[in-house]
Image (cartoon, rainbow, N blue to C red; front, side, top):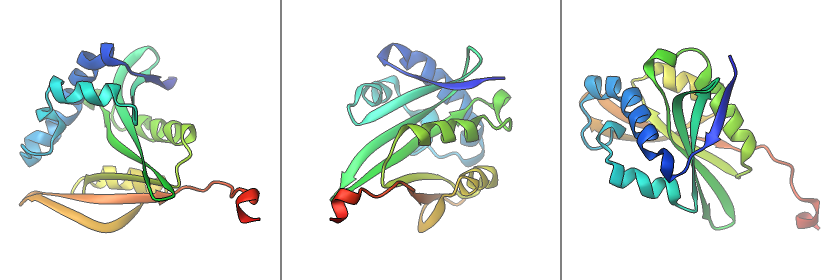
Length: 168
């Protein structure tokens, strides 16, 4: 099956909200993280993310069926460009099919930051494995959410050719 990313707009807010809810509900049921789980995000909080100029939200499609989403947030720290992935989600019935990996590879081919960043649940070994397989490394920063759940932060320095003119 063919998977692709389709740029989302404010018109896609309800669809993304539903997909995100379906994808994150099983994690919410395990970790009971009322403060951070996207299941708790309201439409009012989602809409600005869809229209922000530094943010691109994509619907992940399997064929023509929406199965998840991913958001890339661009920023700068000094002369370094950073792209944060937050969130990435696939609905349960489509998980473990390589869709998230393919979506990440596609997304990473669309942007050219100096540094990629993301975070995930440390206790979710499959998530950590996915990001590490893609070349991300733990930063050493962790955030304990509750006695069951810790957020772990990852980064990946982008491999992009250096501008010869900048060195001269």
